[in-house]
Length: 321
Length: 208
Image (cartoon, rainbow over all chains, first blue to last red):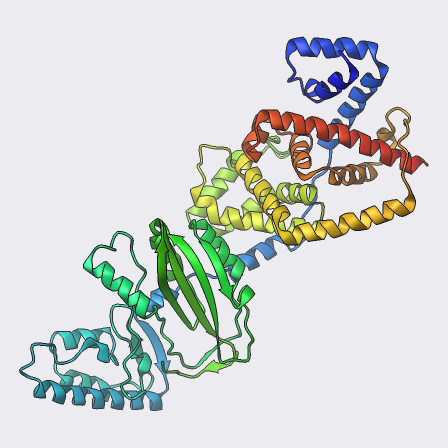
């Protein structure tokens, strides 16, 4: 056996994983070759010292840093829930009064219209009119009169709680904006639902109008926020998706504008979109979030995610979309 | 297990890890902090030896625990927790090493080192006295071994750290790294030969 052959075998020989025959040949060579013997000894010695290498303590704030990063990750709670379920917003008394008046005027107008269109087979009060909470919508659909609404308005408490409906119907985001029709609510497209009527409706809804979170806020002190792009990336990676691009790059915008939109163009596997929905459901802290399916390629849905958050860091006035 | 299952206090670390993981999944958030405490030294040291930079190791080790936090619910409790932990750590380090930012940083360091070695001139590796490593103090020896590890290509460094520092078996290394056994053996052999050469050179430098 030659020295270079022994050199190649020494590592396995030291670990005792060399075949019996090969090990005997190495041993024979080591007895005869001082240079290879020294090489073997020093390799053993180094491996021995390596095994004694001490582990190193992480920085003292290691655990705190991890917990801070866990806390700083988009907590993914609330946003879609806000979109899909009623949200309570506290309004000052004056504003609540104005809102109540607008609702009343609007409904009286609608009531008159309905009377005029009595012969029409269509529902006299379209759902798109908005400006009411979920119960009110229900009332309208079941044909309750405006009387109950009027009564409700008259008995409004000094700090009126206004419920904002979710995606299933219009919300009073346009409260006080002279009966402006709110954004239509959409939803993520389910692969399973694509061929169903409701699925097609959802796709159409998403293509036309994004899923909008309520923008109505009052008296809430907010700090400027930046989007934790890395956390988003990790979340999306975990779902088998990927971020195609982010605008502005890095997810940080100038704080000069009143609202800073960050746009993620992402791809999510169709099979993961339900989970993505659930993740999105947990997002917190954004003023507005919208998601739009922009296309599909193979098993992937292309989604445009627009996140807006206030950047002034001060109290956010009730705003109207 | 790549390292001892039982620590000096007689705690079965594998069992303790799984208990904490189960507690965390059951809603005990403090259990996750205890899991970090149990493994932070292992993870941080491995990151440090693979990356060779304290700050990078800090970021990377934190990232490892964020991943553990995120993916723990997918962990199969019939498999080894620590092997999984090693795999997550190694993959996180690999991802960092593959990043362009990290490559740029390493490239800069290499250029600086090459510039310095040109200034100092080529060192001649001479035969040293028998077992000169034994003459070194523990800290000095540790520093020398760390410096020597840094000279190895990433894959060789990974294999030799897992085998000689962490005490993993060939089988465990293949499981952690995804390399074939033959690849592990050849990389380990090359790594050990190079380490021996580099350390010998360092000792000669110290003595000259």
